[in-house]
Length: 491
Image 1: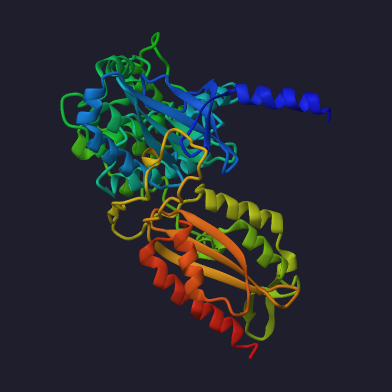
Image 2: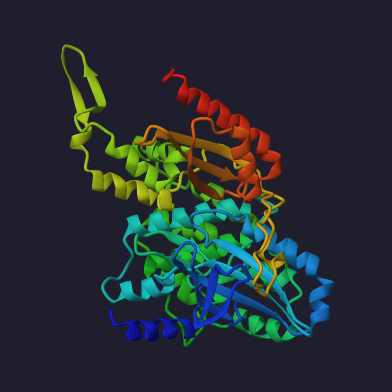
């Protein structure tokens, strides 16, 4: 490549970057996006996560009055901390936030997951060109994923009410994975001190005729509840089934809704939607119970249960380790067998299983396309109270002197390691897999000398901010035990 041309291309890329996060990980670009974020706030930009190498969304919540911001700063921090620990495969991920306070103004910047395939409304609009109704199997899969996310949000402690669930705030990826966006809408609209110049367009948008039919009859007259989300979901499910509800201009009338319901040929689907759209909030079922409605409920196959069990093993969560392990499998090894009295048993060997099909199925399960329904009574998901030092605590201006290592405060809830002898036989390669209390996974590796001290290793992990001080001794004991078991057969 021509060096001058390469230099020009690099300069052009740099010109696209409007701003950089304090830690340098996220780079805000010029392109604005609509990703189901807070209605009425236009400051949503495409950004690049340089650590993961993926696109994300850079959101900004502006406060023109610094005094208003300062008087509610603790509440703002608390709200964003709660949003950061929401973790579900069918909910758009909230990555990080920081506070940027100037002399006369302030803003909250938060980074969220970017879903590039577009909204469900866009998908339905394209589908309508080729067919009149949605495939029942796809409809059931979508409903199951949305209800799985709502069941999680509604069982959180404290409860999360979406408050703005429409087919514009539900996104679908190319592989069929559904993700709910704008989970933070209600927090911003009802609980944070959003200035009047921001609230005004928000109120106007919520009163828009195009989305008004997604809100239940009691909206605005009573306090928001989980029943509100169920009504909105019912309207989404109806629109998913018929692809489009006819409008009179921009407005969807009750008559049009009744016609859409009448056009549904499957009586179970129709009864399911009618339950969600009940005029009485008390009559609407919970998201958890709707998962067991006869139109959706299926007994999980052994294949699906096995996949979920397999993927829950800590070291399997690391893709690269999974690939290493599968390479060691003997193709002629027996994977499963069915014994038969008086006959030769039926055997399945690894060579008879399509690796590509299995990888695709495991990837879909890992991504959340086939969530497991909770057969037990719904239990609250208690969200962690503390996280590691938030990004807003870091310096917003970079200095030429090295920055101190960030102190880790999250506790390790799972740890696994793998030890392998190097070719020179003098060193041992350690691969360490950690799961922290906010579901973050860490993959670390290094070479060890035969006389390496486990206590020294643990202290180094604390020093570089990989584990907390409280976990130092636990990590030292774990490494000592692992090294002892590894060396024991050699002796």
